[in-house]
Image (cartoon, rainbow, N blue to C red):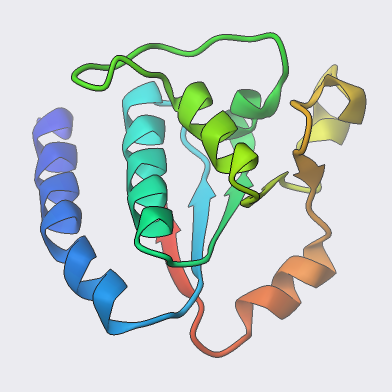
Length: 142
């Protein structure tokens, strides 16, 4: 039942994404907290598609999703793309997208900043709050 609800939600988002992306040049703030690899994948597919349609994207990884940011780890490969959430995240980094882990992620794990993939930073809560209060910021939370 849970997968069915998620599938319906994802379908709705995919159907409406081109309309949203074409109507605005506003930034897209994608916050991923789930440890569910399929949901992570869909979040990053939508972020990638938005970026490909020239929508500025910023990604914040918190809770279990922060594990995607750890270097030298793998994530599940999904079809039909034959790619993983971690690979999509790396592509977003390569394109210059700002990707950060939550400020409380590292202090509550047995890892530090040196364990993060190159290019991933640690979010500053005051800076994120300033970003979020700007006019025109659209949110996707997963």
